[in-house]
Image (cartoon, rainbow, N blue to C red; front, side):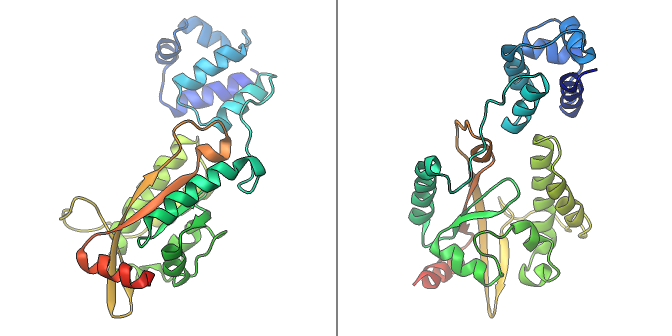
Length: 249
């Protein structure tokens, strides 16, 4: 068995596909999938691309399959501050700035903060988070249950999101550790009473209730960009909206 065949089998099982399932998705014979997994056949670059599409593989996994088959990686992983990432940074900055007076930020695959707008900088500074810090450290901190009023609900949904993101990428130890930590928080009681679960922050005598939407780039050809998420926070009630407007002044 070659490195490629082992990688293909691992991803096929992670996606819970049989060889026949994968053959149907990739429009090849089940026999050919069997030969690829046993090492009796070697894939072409086109075949690896078809398998990557069929398995919905992240870009770094597609690179891994290419290199394991003896090909050069296709997708670069540019640093966030690289010169040719400037249009991306500008686009993210435009979105974040336009979202004020509500908080907004951009994070990478390990929830490290890459950019924040001014409201987010003020809000997260209260939580000890700045650009370059990871939100994983925040959600695993000892004091987080004191900061977030509805911590069991928030922890439950954060745990689900972490597990989903990790599974989509074939398993990310950092995300799995955080998910395991949050999985130890007692399950929330009672049925949901609103369309979304907001995060309710204790800010002294006031409570700030916010919820998030998450945006991603639709046509990424870079490993780092494929995992980048822009999180836009909105007030869950009028009192929180007024608080954010005042907070931004």
